[in-house]
Image 1 (cartoon, helix red, strand yellow):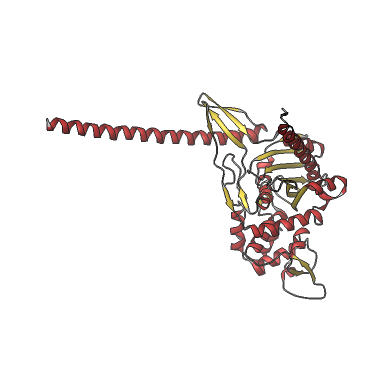
Image 2 (spheres, rainbow, N blue to C red):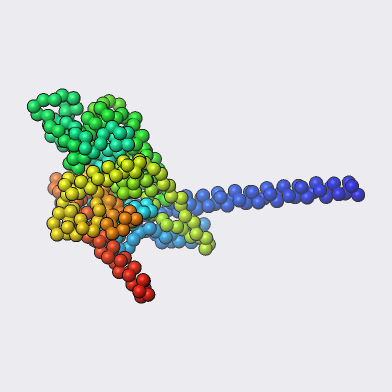
Length: 416
């Protein structure tokens, strides 16, 4: 009898172990299948968006239908596409991010030659960043307490050039002095080159660039090529990289919009994404969205003030000038950085803008960030600041629409 009981006990233990093993196996299989589905959705959406310039609502996975829900805001998307068609350059790309979540609200590109919209250009990382990189250099210098916005620095020659003689610490009758915040607003290459050499290092700025998303996978749900920031080998190369006076630092329009978004989010990086969720067999799945701190809130306040000086008095001041500019200035807090350089793929003269816009009447709303990249050959057509102004006017209409909808719902008359 005791022998029989022992045998039954051993059988139950073996069965229990077997059941646990089967359960564990099925669990691992489920994880692998979910991982495989996620990879399939990512690659399929990326391929169709880039090659066919459309957002597929349904894709097929092993005889099953997968439904995709995107983050695209239809009103903003229509506004972006209309502006691109109305004010085309040889090539243009526009990206709009929701700073509150990191989601992509609108994205499109265009070629002037055939006036055909495409969604591929905003996702390519083959574009020299030009002076947009000054945001990264500024964050590095402020975060490490090397300069303050009011710090006065000197330079010789034109601020738009970067010769080796300009980087020497020599005071002469031709030396001029300028505050760091004004050097940012007017994009002074010499000041940034000298500040990087004298107050920072290649390794330090490289690490800050990495925190901003360079040299790493930026999107979990889309095959976006990584932006590139190299380690400088000489002091002059460090000055080039820190000021944006080079063709080696490459960035995508999606990543460019993130620069402004980080500042609007007080130093917090929210990785961009375009897929809200995907559903198969009634089960909804989402991608993980990464958030991380790039710099402190104190640094973000100083950097935001410098970007806002750029839109009020600096290289992006046309956004807040004129009748429409007054409307924008009265209702929206805007901060920007511009940049221009020749090179990249497609070849041409690049006109860059990254900008954040936050409603003044709702301080909790982090607003949106916009990047605009224009590429032209022999002739310039429409400036990025001009297009941004048009887009911000459309953003105001959307804010008005949301306020009306909110008021109606409070009165019990919900608008459809």
